[in-house]
Amino acid sequence: MSDDSKLVGVVLVSHSGPVAESVATLATGLAGGGTAPVAAAGGTEGGGLGTSSELIAAAAHRVDRGVGVAILVDLGSAVLTVKALLAEGDELPDGARLVDAPFVEGAVAAVVTASAGADIAAVEAAAREAYTYRKV
Image (cartoon, rainbow, N blue to C red; front, side):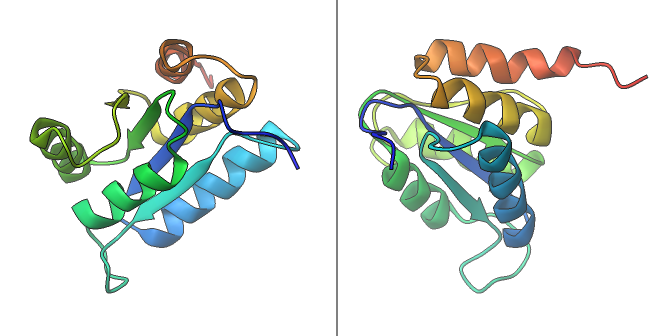
């Protein structure tokens, strides 16, 4: 078991619980062995489609190790929900930030970079860089 006590945490927010869980599984699997703490916050508390500020805040606190939490989101209201939580000031751990990145590719880049022990700025930069990945 790896020591993740000083690693940046990553929260993956999707409108769908299964999507958030699947992207978390993909990202941690591609990161290899011991990875940074990752939590999925998908859908509503009742298992429906949507976003839940309570699930997002709980996920952020689960992965917080005191060195930052990168939060990646899928669609519009997920962005708004995280922005509202950040504006509240006390709902998310200190050092939590919304990262503007493609959801899947950014999640993989963020988790791999965080697992290597990078700081929150490097994790954010790696996730954002995923916008430049070309597929064709």
